[in-house]
Every structure is written in C-alpha cells, then in structure tokens.
Length: 372
Ligand code: N2P
Image (cartoon, rainbow, N blue to C red; front, top):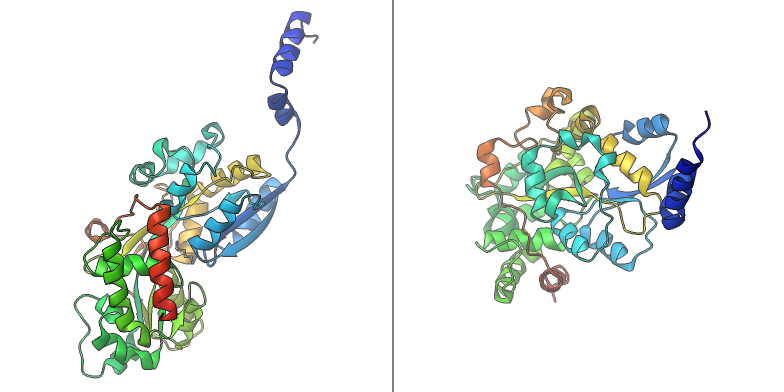
C-alpha cells in the first residue's frame, strides 16, 4: 500500500526537525554490552543466557570498591554501559550528572521491583529515574566458628559481635588465626563510627578523630585488608574473622562445604545492626550502548534471573516475584533475606555522603591502614 503524500511529508518534516532522534532510531546499536560490576556478584549463566537470547556480546569487568568505580566515572569515557555503584555513591554520581535517565517504557519488568526497595532508593534518586537495585546486603562480621572459639580460649563470644573486631581484648586473641578488614574506606569507617554510636556517614570531623583512635587501638591485630580475596581465605581457613559483606561471608561458608575444607563459617547479624547497602545498576551518560544496557536491566528484572543471582551469591534481590525461584538453602538463610525484626535493627543507608565526608573517610582510613 502507498502512503498518502501528505503523510510522508509529515514524517520527513519531523525527522528534519529532529535529525538526531531519527538517526538513533534508524541506526541499530552495535551488539556489544560493557559491564563493570563487583567481583563475586553474578551467577554462571546470567551472561550466557542474555547473550544467547539477544545476540549481544557481553564484556564483563570487575572491581571491588566504590572508590575505584567512582574514580572511573568521574574521569569519564569509561566505555562502560552498565555500572553498579552502591546507592550512597550513586547519589553523588546522579547529582554530578554522570548517569542517563532510564527509559522506563523499555523496562516493563520494573513492575517486579519491591515497593519498599524502590522507596528506599527514591531517597537518593528522586522518582527512581536513574538507578535500579541489583542486589542488597550488609556490612558485618563473619567468623570461622571453631577457630575463633579456640583462639578466644575460655572467653565467651561477646553479646555484640562488633566487639570481636573493635575491642582489643577480643581481636588481640584473634590475630593468631587471621583478621581481615574490608579494603573499603566507607565500610570500615562507617562501621567504626557506628560502633562509637555515631552516624555511619558523619558530617562532624571530631567523630572521625574518635573513630581513628578506636581504629588505631586495634590496628596491630588486623592481618589483611581485602574486599574480594578474603572469601577464599575464609573458605580455606587462612583467616578466622572478617569485617566483610554478608553475601561474601556466606559464599565462603558454601565454598568450604563444597570443597570439604572442614571450615565452619558463619555470618552474623550484629545486635546493634549491620550497615545496609543497595548496589544499583546505572547507565553512564557517555555509555556507547545505552539501548543494550536497557535490555540488560530489563532482563535482570525477570524473577528467575534475579533469583539465580541470589542463589549463587547469597545477597537479597529486590524482585518480589522471584521468591519461588530461590532455593530453600538461600531463602531460609536468615542473613540473606532478612526478617522484619532483623531488618529493623540494621543501620540504614546514609544519604548525606558528599565530597567533604568522603575526604574525611579517606583520610581516616588511610591513616588507619598505614598506621601513620
Ligand atoms: C560483592 C560484594 C558487593 C557488596 N562481592 C558491596 N557493595
């Protein structure tokens, strides 16, 4: 059928007015997607199934701290189409205009996102315009049950598990079996501030001096700084306590079981709470393949895909339709999907992170780590 002449003129006219938009529609995106995500944070078949279904080739790089990702984003031209910062960092990045606005018409699976997670993220991303939760968890303490018991001698476990890493009387005994702290300033400084009864991201510089005093008192007993390798060190028994991330500690637990290393690893929910985090997918402003990035986000939001992430890495996903696909060992692990009581204990995400608080964190952390 022939289009009436006036209709063709209209279309041509619209394109002449908005040449760029028409070009973008007409020109198909190269079938490539560059992803930058945390280490140990994806299932074996997540990428494979996406590639098979879409014909898009995924290049997947990993990092293990927000600091590293942030530096890349600020420098620009990272080449990445999808990045996964924690939400408190994403707030700064959104304000710095580093991310594209999501095209929600391309994301029908957003309907699967739990309303409470969306509401939590709306605090840092008004209208949920730029980011979608990947997985969430909390910063906490994990131990090798038998080794810690042996190292403590007759001393009973403390009522507040944060004491294990922040009280010299405990941690000095644990040095002999290996103590790892996250190589991440905002987690370690946040935990120290929280332990001192301060906000995890304080705006008061004297809180940081006080945190440093605490950290210096236990520095001689920290034997490792790690944000990824500590998983294996826990699984094999070369460290016995970690200030780490909930899912990572559970991965270590499962790895020890699978590899029959004989190590009994346990993640804790501190009675004063762990530090919650929500890691989010975002599309950098200068992403070369934003259309493919949208396809990826919508794919991850499928219930069975989200469930397979949690099944593999022991972090909660935000997908309210995914529960039936989560295996019982994960669904029933109280440190993955938190009960309402445990969730209420947690230290919420701070939405006050700024360049100034980041400088305070960095300075305090570097001074702790180097002992200077
Ligand atoms: C992945 C841990 C990511 C949690 N191993 C920290 N945001």
